[in-house]
Image (cartoon, rainbow, N blue to C red; front, side, top):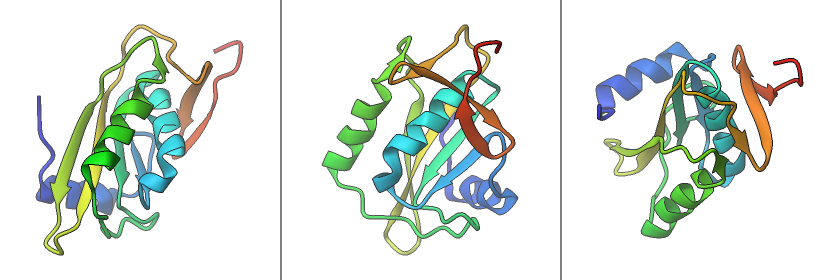
Length: 131
């Protein structure tokens, strides 16, 4: 398993949101973030970052053990079961960015709360019946 370091995080954040990169300000947006994880599982994979503004600024957040448990619990709502890599990257400020690294191209479709999602550019949308 490859671990994300601060240099890689900075480089990915500088690229901006895209099909494979999603920013969330905090784990307060966990539901939206895991929808994006689902979409990336149904596509080419990618990264969901918690503690990054939409403009790519690394702001971090304080991450308690409870927060880590909530992230793990929320990813268990994916069907079929998926186990994306959950990582924490420390910032120089002492705060951290939570990273969910997703490997794509697995047999699917994957669903979150019973609904399949896909990425369309930098947007997560419901998968159509045809797809």
